Image 1: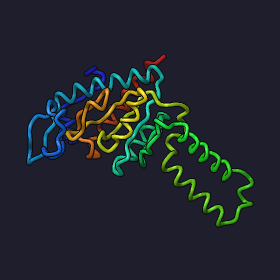
Image 2: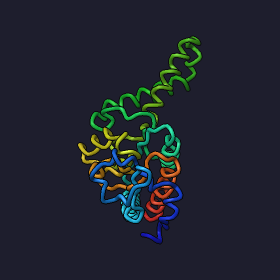
Image 3: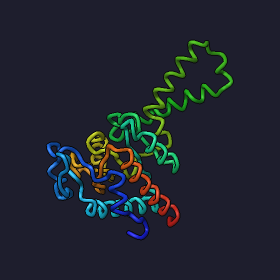
Length: 232
Protein backbone atom coordinates (compact mmCIF):
# COMPACT_ATOMS: atom_id res chain seq x y z
CA UNK A 1 0.00 0.00 0.00
CA UNK A 2 2.68 2.52 0.97
CA UNK A 3 4.71 1.96 -2.18
CA UNK A 4 1.58 2.05 -4.30
CA UNK A 5 0.53 5.51 -3.14
CA UNK A 6 3.78 7.07 -1.86
CA UNK A 7 2.17 9.15 0.86
CA UNK A 8 4.87 11.27 2.43
CA UNK A 9 4.32 12.83 5.86
CA UNK A 10 6.50 15.80 4.93
CA UNK A 11 4.42 16.40 1.80
CA UNK A 12 1.26 16.16 3.88
CA UNK A 13 2.63 18.86 6.19
CA UNK A 14 3.69 21.08 3.27
CA UNK A 15 0.09 20.96 2.02
CA UNK A 16 -1.32 21.84 5.44
CA UNK A 17 -3.08 18.55 6.21
CA UNK A 18 -1.91 18.75 9.83
CA UNK A 19 -3.59 22.06 10.73
CA UNK A 20 -6.83 21.45 12.58
CA UNK A 21 -9.30 23.81 14.24
CA UNK A 22 -9.08 25.74 17.49
CA UNK A 23 -8.73 23.44 20.49
CA UNK A 24 -12.08 24.70 21.81
CA UNK A 25 -13.84 23.26 18.74
CA UNK A 26 -12.21 19.83 18.86
CA UNK A 27 -14.49 16.81 18.83
CA UNK A 28 -13.46 14.42 21.65
CA UNK A 29 -13.49 11.44 19.25
CA UNK A 30 -10.65 13.10 17.30
CA UNK A 31 -8.32 13.38 20.32
CA UNK A 32 -6.44 10.12 19.46
CA UNK A 33 -5.40 11.74 16.16
CA UNK A 34 -4.09 14.95 17.69
CA UNK A 35 -0.33 15.40 18.07
CA UNK A 36 -0.30 18.70 19.99
CA UNK A 37 -1.20 22.35 19.82
CA UNK A 38 0.21 25.36 18.00
CA UNK A 39 -1.15 28.83 18.88
CA UNK A 40 -4.48 27.41 20.17
CA UNK A 41 -4.81 25.32 16.97
CA UNK A 42 -4.78 21.54 17.30
CA UNK A 43 -2.18 19.79 15.15
CA UNK A 44 -3.09 16.42 13.59
CA UNK A 45 -0.72 13.48 14.05
CA UNK A 46 0.28 12.88 10.43
CA UNK A 47 1.73 9.40 11.05
CA UNK A 48 -1.68 8.25 12.31
CA UNK A 49 -3.43 10.22 9.57
CA UNK A 50 -1.26 8.51 6.96
CA UNK A 51 -2.40 5.04 8.08
CA UNK A 52 -6.08 6.02 7.90
CA UNK A 53 -5.40 7.66 4.53
CA UNK A 54 -3.88 4.46 3.12
CA UNK A 55 -6.81 2.35 4.42
CA UNK A 56 -9.21 4.78 2.77
CA UNK A 57 -7.40 4.71 -0.58
CA UNK A 58 -7.38 0.92 -0.54
CA UNK A 59 -11.14 0.93 0.10
CA UNK A 60 -11.76 3.38 -2.77
CA UNK A 61 -9.62 1.32 -5.12
CA UNK A 62 -11.59 -1.82 -4.25
CA UNK A 63 -14.90 0.00 -4.76
CA UNK A 64 -13.82 1.08 -8.23
CA UNK A 65 -12.60 -2.46 -9.02
CA UNK A 66 -16.08 -3.69 -8.11
CA UNK A 67 -17.65 -0.98 -10.29
CA UNK A 68 -19.36 0.68 -7.36
CA UNK A 69 -20.76 4.18 -7.79
CA UNK A 70 -19.16 6.89 -5.61
CA UNK A 71 -20.99 10.17 -5.00
CA UNK A 72 -18.61 13.08 -4.25
CA UNK A 73 -19.84 15.88 -1.98
CA UNK A 74 -17.97 19.14 -1.44
CA UNK A 75 -19.96 22.37 -1.27
CA UNK A 76 -17.43 24.84 0.16
CA UNK A 77 -16.85 27.52 -2.52
CA UNK A 78 -13.05 27.12 -2.44
CA UNK A 79 -13.11 23.38 -3.26
CA UNK A 80 -16.13 23.09 -5.58
CA UNK A 81 -14.11 23.00 -8.78
CA UNK A 82 -11.64 20.44 -7.37
CA UNK A 83 -14.47 18.08 -6.45
CA UNK A 84 -16.35 18.60 -9.72
CA UNK A 85 -13.20 18.09 -11.78
CA UNK A 86 -12.37 14.76 -10.11
CA UNK A 87 -15.94 13.45 -10.31
CA UNK A 88 -16.51 14.41 -13.95
CA UNK A 89 -13.17 12.95 -15.06
CA UNK A 90 -14.47 9.50 -14.11
CA UNK A 91 -18.20 10.14 -14.71
CA UNK A 92 -18.99 9.92 -11.00
CA UNK A 93 -21.93 11.90 -9.61
CA UNK A 94 -21.28 14.94 -7.46
CA UNK A 95 -22.88 17.67 -5.34
CA UNK A 96 -20.92 20.93 -5.16
CA UNK A 97 -23.55 23.64 -4.74
CA UNK A 98 -25.65 22.62 -1.75
CA UNK A 99 -26.78 19.33 -0.30
CA UNK A 100 -30.53 19.20 -0.82
CA UNK A 101 -32.23 17.39 2.06
CA UNK A 102 -33.62 14.09 0.78
CA UNK A 103 -31.03 13.65 -1.99
CA UNK A 104 -30.53 10.09 -0.70
CA UNK A 105 -33.54 9.47 1.56
CA UNK A 106 -36.03 10.84 -0.98
CA UNK A 107 -34.11 9.93 -4.13
CA UNK A 108 -37.24 9.39 -6.27
CA UNK A 109 -38.13 13.09 -5.93
CA UNK A 110 -34.58 14.20 -6.71
CA UNK A 111 -34.64 12.02 -9.84
CA UNK A 112 -37.77 13.84 -11.00
CA UNK A 113 -35.94 17.17 -10.76
CA UNK A 114 -33.03 15.74 -12.77
CA UNK A 115 -35.45 14.45 -15.42
CA UNK A 116 -37.09 17.87 -15.57
CA UNK A 117 -33.67 19.45 -16.14
CA UNK A 118 -33.06 17.01 -19.01
CA UNK A 119 -36.48 17.88 -20.51
CA UNK A 120 -35.65 21.59 -20.46
CA UNK A 121 -32.28 20.90 -22.09
CA UNK A 122 -33.98 18.84 -24.80
CA UNK A 123 -36.46 21.70 -25.34
CA UNK A 124 -33.61 24.18 -25.79
CA UNK A 125 -31.86 21.91 -28.28
CA UNK A 126 -34.98 21.22 -30.36
CA UNK A 127 -36.05 23.13 -33.51
CA UNK A 128 -39.09 24.34 -31.51
CA UNK A 129 -36.83 26.57 -29.39
CA UNK A 130 -37.19 29.38 -31.93
CA UNK A 131 -40.95 29.44 -31.34
CA UNK A 132 -40.52 30.79 -27.81
CA UNK A 133 -40.38 34.51 -27.18
CA UNK A 134 -37.15 36.11 -25.98
CA UNK A 135 -38.67 36.49 -22.51
CA UNK A 136 -39.79 32.81 -22.39
CA UNK A 137 -36.34 31.62 -23.47
CA UNK A 138 -34.69 33.73 -20.80
CA UNK A 139 -37.02 32.28 -18.12
CA UNK A 140 -36.36 28.69 -19.25
CA UNK A 141 -32.59 29.30 -19.32
CA UNK A 142 -32.67 30.78 -15.83
CA UNK A 143 -34.62 27.78 -14.54
CA UNK A 144 -32.11 25.46 -16.23
CA UNK A 145 -29.22 27.32 -14.61
CA UNK A 146 -30.70 26.89 -11.13
CA UNK A 147 -31.51 23.21 -11.71
CA UNK A 148 -28.02 22.57 -13.13
CA UNK A 149 -26.46 24.16 -10.05
CA UNK A 150 -28.46 21.97 -7.67
CA UNK A 151 -28.90 18.72 -9.59
CA UNK A 152 -26.58 18.76 -12.61
CA UNK A 153 -23.99 16.57 -10.92
CA UNK A 154 -26.60 13.86 -10.34
CA UNK A 155 -27.66 13.46 -13.97
CA UNK A 156 -25.86 10.11 -14.39
CA UNK A 157 -26.97 8.71 -11.03
CA UNK A 158 -29.68 6.20 -11.95
CA UNK A 159 -29.87 4.53 -8.54
CA UNK A 160 -28.59 5.28 -5.05
CA UNK A 161 -24.79 5.42 -4.82
CA UNK A 162 -22.81 2.62 -3.14
CA UNK A 163 -20.43 5.05 -1.46
CA UNK A 164 -20.47 8.75 -0.59
CA UNK A 165 -17.21 10.72 -0.34
CA UNK A 166 -17.67 13.76 1.91
CA UNK A 167 -15.09 16.57 1.97
CA UNK A 168 -16.28 18.08 5.27
CA UNK A 169 -18.10 15.93 7.83
CA UNK A 170 -19.44 18.96 9.72
CA UNK A 171 -20.73 21.01 6.77
CA UNK A 172 -22.04 17.90 4.97
CA UNK A 173 -23.41 16.31 8.15
CA UNK A 174 -26.85 15.79 6.60
CA UNK A 175 -25.36 13.98 3.59
CA UNK A 176 -23.48 11.59 5.89
CA UNK A 177 -26.59 11.00 8.03
CA UNK A 178 -28.75 10.23 4.98
CA UNK A 179 -26.13 7.82 3.64
CA UNK A 180 -25.91 6.05 7.02
CA UNK A 181 -29.68 5.72 7.15
CA UNK A 182 -29.66 3.96 3.77
CA UNK A 183 -26.68 1.72 4.56
CA UNK A 184 -24.39 3.55 2.14
CA UNK A 185 -20.70 3.59 3.07
CA UNK A 186 -19.36 7.01 4.07
CA UNK A 187 -15.79 8.06 3.26
CA UNK A 188 -14.71 11.46 4.56
CA UNK A 189 -12.01 14.02 5.18
CA UNK A 190 -12.30 14.44 8.94
CA UNK A 191 -10.99 17.63 10.55
CA UNK A 192 -10.50 17.98 14.32
CA UNK A 193 -13.99 19.45 14.82
CA UNK A 194 -15.79 16.42 13.30
CA UNK A 195 -16.98 13.10 14.68
CA UNK A 196 -15.04 10.36 12.83
CA UNK A 197 -17.69 7.82 13.82
CA UNK A 198 -19.95 9.39 11.19
CA UNK A 199 -17.71 7.79 8.54
CA UNK A 200 -16.81 4.19 7.70
CA UNK A 201 -13.43 5.31 6.36
CA UNK A 202 -11.88 8.68 7.10
CA UNK A 203 -8.77 10.76 6.54
CA UNK A 204 -7.84 12.91 9.56
CA UNK A 205 -6.89 16.17 7.84
CA UNK A 206 -7.55 19.86 7.31
CA UNK A 207 -10.76 20.18 5.29
CA UNK A 208 -10.60 23.98 4.77
CA UNK A 209 -7.30 24.61 2.99
CA UNK A 210 -7.44 24.21 -0.79
CA UNK A 211 -3.90 22.75 -0.76
CA UNK A 212 -4.96 20.03 1.70
CA UNK A 213 -8.10 19.03 -0.22
CA UNK A 214 -6.22 19.13 -3.54
CA UNK A 215 -3.53 16.81 -2.17
CA UNK A 216 -6.11 14.36 -0.81
CA UNK A 217 -8.21 14.32 -3.99
CA UNK A 218 -5.02 13.82 -6.02
CA UNK A 219 -4.37 10.59 -4.09
CA UNK A 220 -8.03 9.58 -4.40
CA UNK A 221 -7.62 10.02 -8.16
CA UNK A 222 -4.66 7.60 -8.06
CA UNK A 223 -6.81 5.08 -6.17
CA UNK A 224 -9.57 5.38 -8.77
CA UNK A 225 -7.07 4.89 -11.61
CA UNK A 226 -5.63 1.81 -9.85
CA UNK A 227 -9.14 0.44 -9.41
CA UNK A 228 -9.94 0.95 -13.09
CA UNK A 229 -6.64 -0.62 -14.15
CA UNK A 230 -7.06 -3.66 -11.92
CA UNK A 231 -10.82 -4.06 -12.24
CA UNK A 232 -12.58 -6.87 -14.01
